Amino acid sequence: MIQRRKTMPKRSPQQNGTPQQLEQLLSTLPTLAFEPELADLNMGHEELRTLLQSERTEADILMELLTEEFIADLDQRLEEMETVHSEKSIKSILAKVTRHQIANKDKIPYLSNPVLIAIFLKTRSAVEGKELDLAGLPAVMDEFDKRNHDYIQGLTQKVQVSEEAGLSIKADEELSEEEKPKERIPAIKADIYTKYLALVPAEKQEQVEEDLDVFLVDFEPPPVAEWDADLVKEFMEKWFLENANPLEEDLESMRESLSNLFDFLAEEELLSAGFLDAASMYLQKS
Image (cartoon, rainbow, N blue to C red; front, side):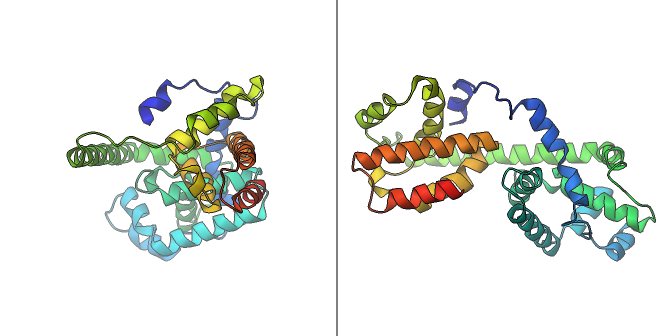
């Protein structure tokens, strides 16, 4: 899938999703630590004060303070932030990104999470009798990165090597179990899919094909008769977010492409009873 995605035509830049805007969005992540929902959240003043008196490295101290209780508290606050603010608001987007990073700690180490680092630095400043505000945050974050650059870089490389080794072992096991790959049964028959694409307006053809290629080929859903609303929810809320890192415009495009496809398949009487209503309702609310 990775090789195939590399050769696919890239989407033309959109006004609301340029690389510069995405970079600016990601650079804003640490400021979440100063939002009202997280303002009183810290990693434990007394615990940090004790650890700072030891000979442990700063990275080790930070990891020691990232307890399950702290992560659970942070995740709950971020979830509330997502709920309270509109889906398109900057706070909701940043909260969602941070929760995604925390949930994928095996691929995204905690020491690479700017929100966790910002909370740690804010806690440390308080313990040292200083006050860290938004204006001083960038400089303090930069100093933290410089002090721990080698450690973080080594940790990241270790995770990458571990992932590559795991993928290699898994691939070898799969090849040994099967002499040749199983022939994949498409979710929708080729003639039906071709008929649908012929109805898509020319100006939307490329976008629709790319969206549905992700759903039908990369996601690999079962035959259309077995589809249900849970399948759509799993794709939109889990698989698509984790594998495509979509921007809001990508999510909107995918909702529209799936909704139109489902309408067509309903007219062709290929969907299970009740699927269209449930899926349409979900896509409108998601």
